[in-house]
Image 1 (cartoon, rainbow, N blue to C red):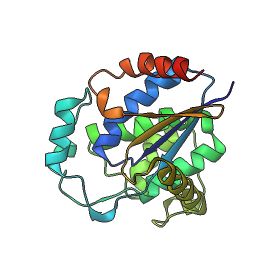
Image 2 (image 1 turned 60 degrees about the horizontal axis):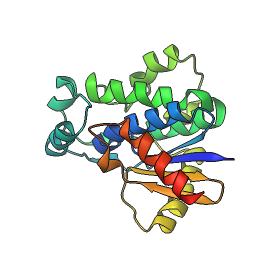
Image 3 (image 1 turned 90 degrees about the horizontal axis):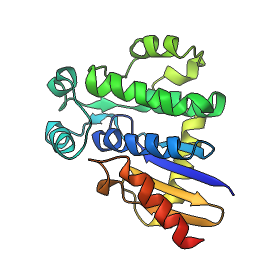
Image 4 (image 1 turned 120 degrees about the vertical axis):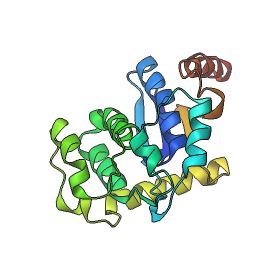
Length: 202
């Protein structure tokens, strides 16, 4: 039996931040599951989710937003370097990728770290004992990050949407689209729902 989870997200997207606890819950329930964190690199320094969207997410999820983030919620965001770092980690230290994503989102949404320049990542990179190459923080998409965008495109064609965040679990040849919006207030509930769906397709 081969179980895999695909999570299409953007590190600077508040809805993705709200969906990450579902990924945490599923990873805990299925520790041998192969995890694919696919950063969409949506924010390129020209726009942001905005404070209105952040407040909407706060109302329907358990996630917290710090004043440091709220103050600049309407300022343009750039997630390219984060996309590069996450792609590098997936290739070099896959066992650290989910924990790293949680740390990056904590830094961005709670502590107000913009996660834009190389210096913004220093403390987290040091804490995780990572040594990413120079290309990660050049401000343009790396080859690894672009390859993940190709994988995202393939998944989006299959499920028929370009929206994100997206959660898809596969078991052997079967695939389950997980409607994350149903579980944002109770992330653990996604585990029971997935187990029920998996039992139905066996």
